[in-house]
Image (cartoon, rainbow, N blue to C red):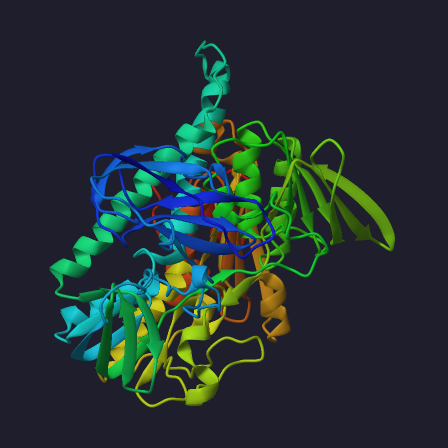
Length: 585
């Protein structure tokens, strides 16, 4: 017989949800209590579980699509009969396994324990336990395992963390699709005649999902190959040597000589009236849309907001970006923000800076109106949907910081010393949960430093040497000190620039905007930092990063031979420009 899996009644205001993720495929066998899918609504997540043993016959609603309460979303083929009173779902907060008081919500994060046997208890002793399987967590696990430590890694969701599942990797996949679409439609400029093509965002999302799945499987294989014990479940820090994990009707008590906290962060919604409307999205929700709106307003002109604005624009969405600071990409060199703003507006993206979102309200035609204040004046901007791309909250709830005496910063991040050690003995923390720039590669490097310190190899990080990359069109990147930062620190600063438009390889791409800039200490000509905007900037920045990290001088850079014709020559020319000797300037 066929059994229909329906969206259950939830403790929320909205009468519909978005299917965020399916855990099963058609033809797959499932058991009662297995998680089938996860849905989102009112900024909370709910897992819907199988009520019967059976085979998945049909998935009726795709990821990213809306579903109403009590709507059938999946069909199971089963020989069992089902009690109407059996619980159907496990509501959860994104960062907690706390349960509410009603019968329909007495579930932990990974499935209902009601009607099941008493959970099994298991004990495990390891050299290192890591809470969180994102870029920092899994890098730390592999680094430690390669050094001979026994390692347990606890992850409540998917391996790879925000970056791989809901952040940098999914957006880069969609950027690839968007840029290819744009390139094909400009083929006439390169002597190629084609009919105009249109993008299919739902197919782009499928491509993105395939990339993410491949990389998730790759991370799992890396951990398995290095004999890392991966425990799926909600981990709780109990002491400086103890972690408890609830997973699949099992409680695992882990005793570890050392612990690394790598629990990451999650999107944070600002206090704007009306922000709980169902058409106000976070980046996580946007990345799973199957159909794009005609107009989108993005609150936040930082890295996430600007990358997504270019993606949406290339797929035909009318985009407006609202940024509270006086320029976009406010935490980068101001010159970068100015250059990207020019390119964005040339491509049809509307940029409003110095404006604060005050209220979101629904209008009669079904869209949303956002009210802004700018220079004490009110502005109103319409969008079918609104994307919130500002702010992150630190995932610290499972760390029991107050009870354990784990020090935190004023912003709520875990406080660490220069060796990434927390206030608890033998407990380290890395990645988003300690604040900073919230970059995946920063977390990965912190992982290496933390593990080396655990191994007795004293290390610390110079955060000035960590590059930042923005995958807009054109790309942008920087490393080291900006001109303003260097001056504020008391350096005698001299900068040298070279325009991308004077480079032969750049000319062949017809994407001429951009520059290469070096920030130099004029007393000894040591390179303090640099920034790039233009073709391939996110790859080229590492040449400057090597110079900054190793305190190279401009003379040493000018003595390096750069191949021709390459975009890398822009960096060479900017080093020559320091002495007024650029060739093509």
